[in-house]
Length: 400
Image (cartoon, rainbow, N blue to C red; front, side, top):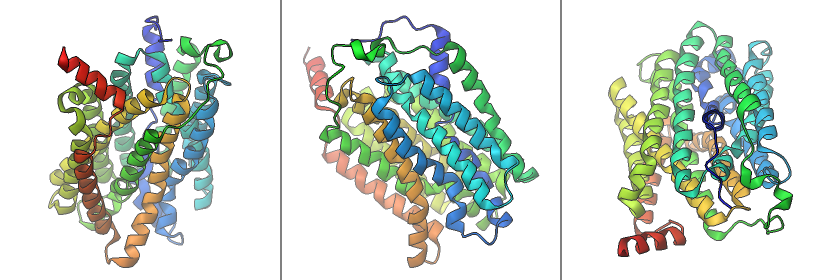
């Protein structure tokens, strides 16, 4: 059963507002160097957990929520809880910061909110007709990344004023909370789930879904270090402090926001080459950051890296929905997103591990990302990762 065209504009706005914190853990990245300086007794890899710990916690929450949302609990209930956790966990370090581990505790609460909000992709797939899902998933990424740009710039400049002030950016969670409270409606095709014809259909993860899980996991493990290392990298190169790194990092999400808008338009043009091209763009962006001799060059490379990832992400979720089927989509999309969050968490440990083998861990992670993205791009040039039914539909359309 497809969703009818009965969504009000405010309902659509409320759905899109659930993406506001899709990159919310990145907002604190410009302040990481400030945290390193404020807590010198804490290891750098532990400091970076302010950005990666929410991802780890959210990954487990997403898998749990994905198994029950839309079937045993309403999307609206889960998303209200998500925004309350994001608001509380995001701003708590302003007053609860006597030790670094107090801040980590608050970030754990923030991670719960990220996990609950991970059902947003399943909500889009359940709310819109199949031919509109890619468009609205891309629009959701645009909303999330645009907010991410704003959050990172503000957080960077606030961090220059004071470390505690940087957490004020999370007050923006009030806006999606109010929109969800007053305007979000449950998708028609999951209400009530117990009465639908496929209520007892087995929820399963098909083999191809595991490939999509692996794609986002690998990208985030290799590529997220560009975010957590940027404030250190910029200061190491003598280009500035938190404010400058915040502006550069905002270009990662800005590049992603622009790319996500055109993702559904670019895919029909490149088809099977779309995903490989995203990896090649990501590799080239990482290369520009590595060899960048000035801020503009690093900024362009950062924007390209973001464009590669966030242009690919909506299509991966579209592929997942096409393969999984309606009943399994909430769980499968949640696991795909959870895998990316686990990759984010592990990225700091990849950096730490490379630091044991190389003199400069920051540079080593960039080499690792460049080589990894390039190799994967070549592999997917040879192997078509698209869902078989999408490939067949394209062949039939071409034959007409």
